[in-house]
Image (tube, rainbow, N blue to C red; front, top):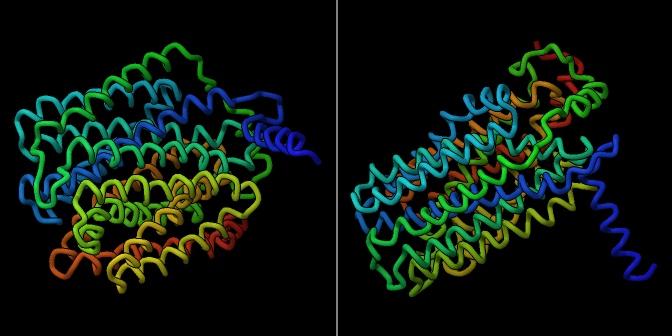
Length: 429
């Protein structure tokens, strides 16, 4: 087969990812929705820079600076259930537009917050932004699993989450250059803090206008019916009796604890382990190194999951990350930083894959289940715990928190198939 023929075959097979059995092609809609993943990825990446900024500018401990993540992810927790009900009443489009409105409002809040200059006032804006992003995630994550064949839902959500990884990579790269000083131990102050958020507000307003004008498909009943016909899990069982979903919520919660802790204290760990490394340089390592690996992992993972079993892939990735966290804790210097950067690659598929495993065969309960899975982002609010451990011991030992989390995720991946089988057999009552 010629190279041209191979390329044509590849793109033909890839395009099937977005085509349903009844002939509908959702490629363009998928691309548009994926811009939302880019948006919340950038916002999340930006807050990882804020930790170090406020530690320097306001002389906060690592535990106190962790309240940035606390405010952010509490916003996710509080808004997830209302967002699910809102989307159920007003549709996917209504949920997206409402979420974008809140993100714009919270981003514009950064302008007066920068002038006031207090930590608590800025946290209010982060809370509002997070509430908006919670609405977007509640809608967009399950929406991508519907834009094509049911059996490729995990591959699609991982591909969409690749855009999230791009945003998370750009967040510290752009934010670090604007907010952090290039000199070790110095800070730029709050003067430039509003700039990236003003940019977010402008982009969000533009996106809201586009979504208002575009007609989004809302009726996926046929896809859900097709899925329900193939399921052996009793449709009348409430969610709390479906243990593959319950365990997904637990696994997802611990994943968010791990991810947020690693992202938040990457700069601290790198500065501590690399001589003469400034905060700004460490933010570049975070964006191009760690989050670059995160992006590569999601792109590669979206193709791996077209062939591999999602539960097995999740277990393998979690096991590798458990080993890497041990190296981060026990090694010093460059080896520890390399292990920490490598962990981003193996974190990459965990959130979207667990999400897809959690909503597996749920049919018309998918929207409700998605709300609970998005609520697990409250795991990021536990960042002060990791910060406290780092304060009373050292930054390396603080990574015992993500190590413990990856072990739990590994167990979910290993036992997922058995849990699904038991759900189908109705052994749990």
